[in-house]
Length: 290
Image (cartoon, rainbow, N blue to C red; front, side, top):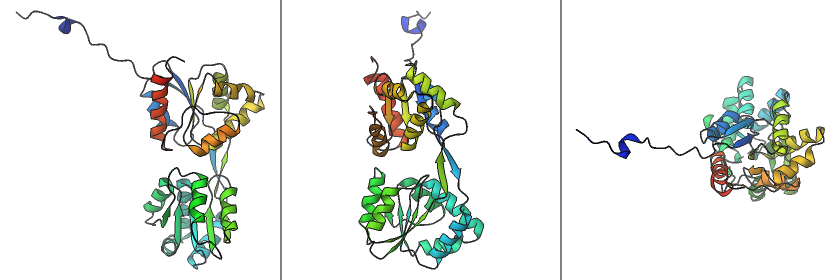
């Protein structure tokens, strides 16, 4: 007969999830569930509060003119800033019947892509990238990359993200290029501001352990909504004191600092995975006793 031992009768205790008892505010719009799930797997309670909406602009006429100019070989350089912009532009170009001609024309053009997302979107349409902007894929990185190209007397097409990049447009024109700009979607506040308003209140009340910013627009929009109810100052205080402010990268961090908020977390690489990893590490270890 087998004798029972302590190891036979006492169940092994599982370690608690790293973020058990923690609450994280997520401002991401397109990838809300993706980032929330990553935190929930670590045991966190996630407050989903999208801080922006991508609104399609009626730019059919502008896109048609852009495509015709490109096909006629009148662009020397084309700059793409986002995967969303590439996808929406090429979808509309396909609808207009120009996709094959545009693909061929881009093969004869210097194509600049800001990071892996526009590069991947172009690749899905079998369009190559001539110049890839290096990490951290900030506006300044794009400016530095474009300034390294021969711009004088060239015609450059710039496909913006959800708002006009004045710094990049100025740099291209200062280099002596003729600039054509195309805006095909806009970043706006969501129609339903309830979740964002709720997150602001919970942050001020000290019920949020970390707020995760993945774009500079989220910073502006969150503070704009707080200001509508005269809560901007207490929100800034909370984000600097009892709530951990996490930023995905240098551009987002600069926007926070410009508004009086010092982020405690910025990953070495400006990507979602490293950002979540750093937040988990901070809340579970470094900030455990705060």
